[in-house]
Length: 542
Ligand code: PEP
Ligand code: MG
Image 1 (tube, rainbow, N blue to C red):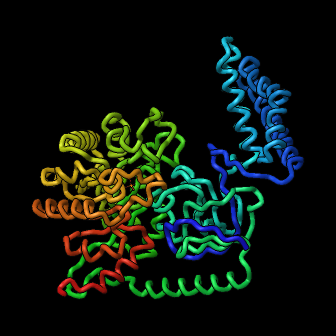
Image 2: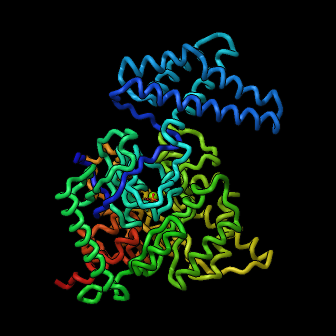
């Protein structure tokens, strides 16, 4: 048995086999190997597979686009036979005793640099080609093309890190737990684990060597540990703990259908956050009173091109119908920062969290925004939809949004397309929005406080950077005072205010939020019943 420590981002016990999830754009991991002969053989097998792929691509290109365009695949095949290139890789494996992926990666960087520094234009171009062929071999070595789950039984996912665009592709029924080497507490992998009610660990210092694939493991999300090949005593202890946990969850089920009301009669709305219509099942299972945040950008992340108005309409309609008259708050796309979709063709930014993201993209590319708004308005006929706009910093932005949304309504009217009146609210997730909340409250129907971003911008702590976890104080008084200020400003204008960031589920703060007068808490589906339990135990009169 080997034991590793990490940071738990969601509790629970998972017992199952390991599946290493290779990334599509693999960050190459270096690890030591014992048998360099066998590793060179592994490289050779991958090289042959890459050659076969290129031969297939050459034949396909010849018939589809002609000889001239197909020639590049022939050049790539020749490069894969180049002695200098091959010797360099084999030498690194042998001399340094390291894995093939690493040797290929280093060779690619070295050769690309040499080519790029040459005067000859033809040779310069070969820099990109050497990277390309090397990536192909690394993909074969790491199975990266099959980043999908192929296993039939649910598995513990082990990965270097997981981007939202990767987690969206996973079949959630096959995931028992997420364990990553990198990642941070507020990452979307952590949020996904909370939605799915499965344990997740980040910052686990484990080498992702292929031998781990299929090994039995136990993830203890309560203590931030993973046991590889657990001994029988640990296994039976963990099985007991898992069964106790299931019993606790069963007891929580008895709270279904009960009100979210304190002993002294103060009630609060408890809604759920989702990223996908598939999550609706979790919402119903956990008896949430509505959807407080539908992260619509996941529709864009799952797609290889801009989702059409009709595709979006069907999704929003389904959410509205399924929730049967309960409020469904759909946030307009919050793409950018850690949530990147290639087809948006966004420039690489020095500081993406503060870059062209969310509402800023919508306001600079109104055609994308209007498509989404049309779909939302059309879906409003099927339930109680509300729209929420992310990353607001000023009154002017809200006015621009309102003008665009009025244009969309006018177009729908012109075409005789019916829609219902929709509540329109904004996320308060920047310090600027907090400071302007007295004026913003006059413009919108509700506020929803995004504590994930509000915390990062207030404390100047990148939510994606695990090295900053020790500086991150989730209960920082600055953030709590901001929440209180927003509450007061909302109520002065008679609009309701909720929290949809992760802090809403923090049971240590529930009492304080209720005393501030928060009207709604929107949390991951698995946190709905524990939160209800907490609310029902409070007596604010005391
Ligand atoms: C937030 O910032 O608190 C929030 C709810 O939005 P996201 O986590 O999707 O940025
Ligand atoms: Mg946010």
